[in-house]
Image (cartoon, rainbow, N blue to C red; front, side, top):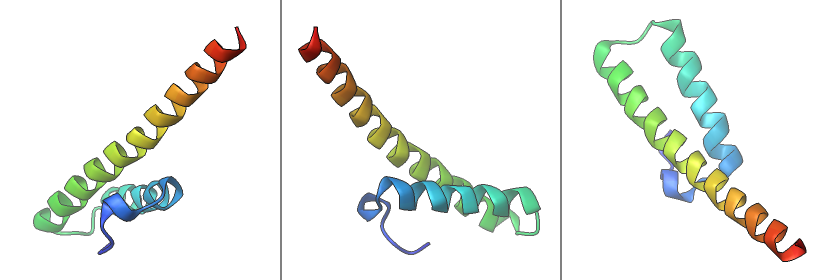
Length: 67
């Protein structure tokens, strides 16, 4: 998890986010580790949302061009 989030592709961020969620669900980490995982997960989710928002804008622009 040491790679900078800004350098991750959508797929890499999504896969890491899934791992973070799985770790949190297992509940065998300390409170400090849980907080760090939660914060990383939030940042990963925002990064993924940025990709999705960009894709949404491209689709909307393409639809407008077709009409």
